[in-house]
Every structure is written in C-alpha cells, then in structure tokens.
Image 1 (cartoon, rainbow, N blue to C red):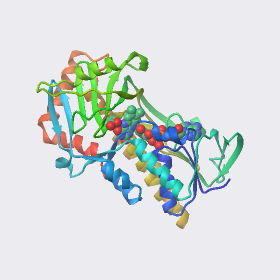
Image 2: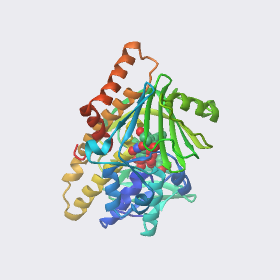
Image 3: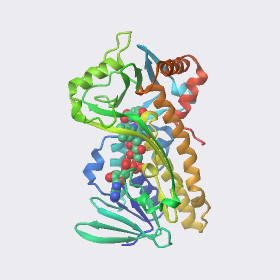
Image 4: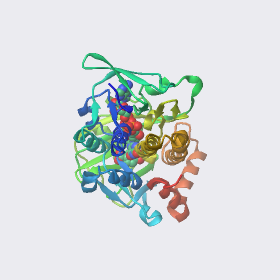
Length: 390
Ligand code: FAD
Ligand code: PHB
C-alpha cells in the first residue's frame, strides 16, 4: 500500500489530521489497533475550548456538535461548603463546549468514511521503518495478513501507550515527566446533572468533579489512590463519597442514578522533546500527557494536528519545509503552557498524602484569592478557555 501520510491511531488526533489533510488534497491512511465500536464508545474527555470548536466548524465536522454540544459560560469552584462561580465569558469573551470525546470521534470517523477515506480498524503489530530516511514505511497485520504501508511521512497519533514514540532512538529524545500520588475514578451516571455548570470541588476528603454529557447524563470524577482497583468502588461507596465531597452549606443536592460506566485513570505529566524525529511526527497523547484537571489533553491533540496539517500542506504545495522544521517548537510552547496550568489546577484542588497543615492553608489561601480577585480569576479563565496565542 502507498499513501502520502501514514497515520497510526484513530483517536481525535489521528482522525482529525486525516480529515484536515483530505481538505488540503493530501492522501492518508489511518491504522487503528481497536475496533470502530471500541473507539466510538470509549468515555473520556468532555471539554472543548472555543478554538477547538471553531476549528471543527471550519473543517465542516461540527454539525452535531453545534446541535448537541452544551455551550458553557462559567465554571464553579467549591470549597469550605461554599460555591464560587468563575464567569469565563465575562472575563475572557470566550466560552467552552461540553461534548464527549467519543462523539467527536464518531463525527470524524463518519466524515472520513463518507469521503472515501481509508481508516483500518483492528490492525495489530504496527512497526515503523526508515523514519530517519525519506522513504518511511509502516508494517502491520490486518485480517491475518502482513502488510506494508509506504508513505512520505508518518504521524504517530497512537496515544500514550502507543508504539510510535519507541521508534525515536533514546539518544534523540528527552523525556520530562512527573507522577502524582493519586488517580481519578470517573463514572457516567444516567441522571440529570445537578448543576448547570461544571463543578470543581476541593474538600477535606479529596477532590471531586461534577460534569455532564447531556440533559440526562452526568459525568463525575473522584480523586482516589493510585492503582486503586475499580472493584474497590461499588456504586454505593461512589455516591457516598461524591455526596460528602460536593456538599455545600446552602442546601444544594446531588441527584443519584444508575452508573453506566466506571474506570480509574492514573494521573501523570509527560512531555517528549522534540516531537519530531526525521519523517516521524508525534502528535497528541503520543507526545504529551497532562493531568485532566485543566481539561486540556484533547484540545492539545487538536492543536498539534492543526499546525501539522498546515505545515504538511505548505510542504506539499511549495516544497518549503520551514513550517515542518518549526512544528515541534510551535506545539511545545502550547504544551508547556497547558502543562503549567494543569499542574497548577491539580495542586489547587487535590489532597496529597504528603500535604502538611501549612500546605493545606496555602491551598485555601489560593482558593480564597481566586474567589475574591478578578485578576486571579481572569488568569484561570483565560487558560481554561484556551489561549489563542501562546
Ligand atoms: P488517544 O485518544 O489515546 O488515541 C490514540 C489511538 O491510538 C487510540 O484509538 C488507540 O487505540 C490507538 N493505538 C494505540 N496503540 C496503537 C498501536 N500500537 N497501533 C495502532 N493504534 C494504536 N482532555 C480534554 O481536552 N478535556 C477533558 O475534559 C479531558 N478529560 C479527560 C478525562 C479522562 C478521565 C481522561 C483519561 C482523559 C481526559 N482528557 C481530556 C485527555 C484526552 O482524552 C486525551 O488527551 C485525548 O484522547 C488525546 O487524543 P489522541 O488522539 O492523542 O490519543
Ligand atoms: C469531563 O467532562 O469529562 C471533564 C470535565 C472537566 C475536566 C476533565 C473532564 O477537567
């Protein structure tokens, strides 16, 4: 097989890259380990920055997003039994949209297949070859047969646990990482959201997050110990803990309902530099992970492939490689801004086993400052809605 751009991974990064390249007249093939059903059902992110929504709109894949996505103009910070609204739109002029990542994936898969795009699901044994030459290839198995895809460039969009990053020799990459002494237990519940806006709660029992997916689906998260088995969290214990961590002094109530999905996700920060090696471009979670507290991961993946599609388009059109040369540095500026914001939000809201009483007082002072100072709230808001220029 032959194509111009070989893409590994059909998450938001790989699918959107394939779609954006198609709009530029550039051919690509997407190779995905899992089934179409699996990638379309996997519950993950939910917050889209306005810039992400605008890009999907310009790319012609935002019809359902516009109809079903929920535009939000603020978020709530909850601590000490009190609620404080951060009015995102008043502070920045911009908004966020709540729309499940798997819905973005469904919309992109449909757009690719309708345009005759090649997305191969349930492909395994992916191995990259010759990414340091100008004739790279991807070997894989599909339908029980060994295959080879020859291309001009390879986009490694295969997430944090993918194989593409390993094709970069250790001497040619530098890794920056940080582990956190907690994880998130995420649940999807068949009950109307109890709050109109997303609630980030810092409590003495740990962090809790109340989000939503639709007028009848609530998405909730709890800070739990790292490597906590999901079996340790029967539904009754989850609701009890959510009730305790989200409680307020003003009579707010959390409605409970059947839990449809639950999972534990470890929390880490990770960046590989540079994001390019020869003809291999690592985009999205393959190159960087942020803790989910800032809601940045999917938005970063989208930003990476937006810049990459433009750089590849310029290269194919004119032969000029300058945008490809600067691609990694351009992306890393945004990545590190998001890394800083996500780390800061995480520290602001979580309890660590090594927090001493002094640290807890500092955390409370930071939260009070955000609740009282417009300057502090604006800084949070402009990072949360996404900086237009980084
Ligand atoms: P992925 O979505 O991981 O896609 C990679 C794809 O590659 C997958 O389909 C995988 O099956 C495939 N693959 C892997 N290995 C191979 C292989 N060897 N061969 C072929 N294919 C392979 N981000 C936000 O912006 N906002 C949020 O609110 C938010 N909340 C989150 C909440 C949770 C609980 C979690 C876990 C994440 C959250 N994120 C959030 C992060 C976001 O989900 C990720 O950043 C996003 O999925 C990155 O997209 P991606 O396409 O780079 O990678
Ligand atoms: C979500 O709705 O899944 C969500 C919201 C905010 C976050 C992370 C996840 O920070």
